[in-house]
Image 1 (cartoon, rainbow, N blue to C red):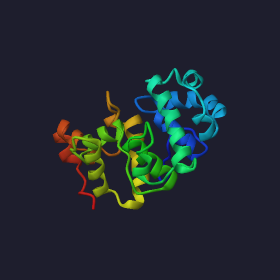
Image 2 (cartoon, rainbow, N blue to C red; image 1 turned 30 degrees about the vertical axis):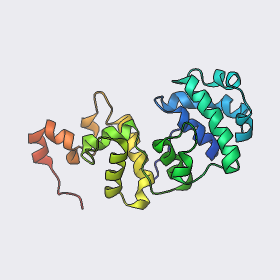
Image 3 (cartoon, rainbow, N blue to C red; image 1 turned 120 degrees about the horizontal axis):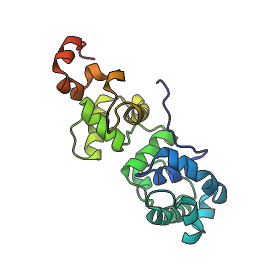
Length: 207
């Protein structure tokens, strides 16, 4: 996959920021089904900043944790207007000052919008990194630090998507599709589960 991309639908950084905030503990598919009317009704940070809770909530009530996310979206838009001239910032620390934006969300925005050499660690990335053997970090930040050792800066934005998509469609949480996995010869978890097969098929260590 030479050019992997996010599966979230958006047309500008503001829309992507909204979509990523909504995607926390929710599927991209559900978010993509939900956001079109939300984007149409609130196309700018100013329009969302001026909205009330009761105006925004109906648009995202099918999303997980709609109450907190509704307030996060409104407060995020207010801060975006007040502190950043309605522009989504590129700096990780600045992004993390926005309500509803943690390190993972900030890294997603920085890597996708601004092509910064960071790797966002969500549940898929965390799981796949441990299974393959890229990290044994106990926290997302620790895993992020480990991954930065293995992926060159130019590859990190793509690596984020590689790991997410691999976890979403192959190295699934339940019943991972090891038989269809092109990485199993390098995978720590598969080697432990299949020591004889792993020994017979083990390639030379990648450089």
